[in-house]
Image 1: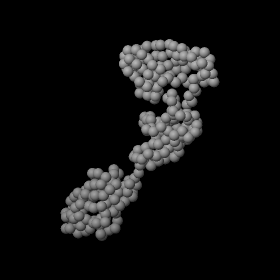
Image 2: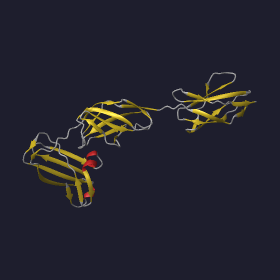
Image 3: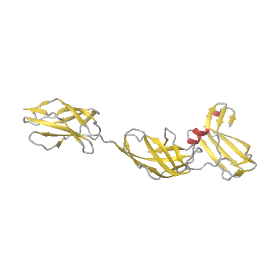
Length: 283
């Protein structure tokens, strides 16, 4: 449908009302799902629209009356009423899909695309899937409609702990959400140590900085040490400073006696990796 006029680029809301065998109304607001799928072109002197009327019944004899309201950014409204003939055939019924379950119910937050299966009813071509942690976002790819009761969609669950909820929407923007969320668990990498610097310190009883190089360093890591005299791992008093995923620094007090200290870095789950070379402490 084409609408011609002036200043049509200022339109922010489009309202539809229809009457005939059934009555109903829709409202499209700039930026929402209906606007994005139904406003095909918007120019100062032309609107190209793709309206969808949701109707029930197998037939619609005679004409229907549609009322189109265009509302600009200042709330000013222009109304146009016109007749539409359906030749005895009703407009197509657009069903709102419903969700009964999702599978799987948990994923690893590895930053890679993974497949989610959504079960329910009323799934059809033109449906799209949205998810939210805080706001609804449409998935990048269109879903694969397996049947009216199942679809699959590719999602990237991100890299942090979260709970994601999903909804399936029809082409008219009518949606149904899942009641249960998808639990996303972040990958906790075990850090590894490749070297330490320096490899020797003076046993002066003062705090000194040790640099540990390796991989998989992240927030929540902690550093432990032990000496030759004791095989017991002891956590450093201060938390390490994570310079990057491959480097951290930590403040240690090497004591006041000759010793060789060994270090290990542990993640928040308590999985640790130790250095093969020790720190020589000389009095």
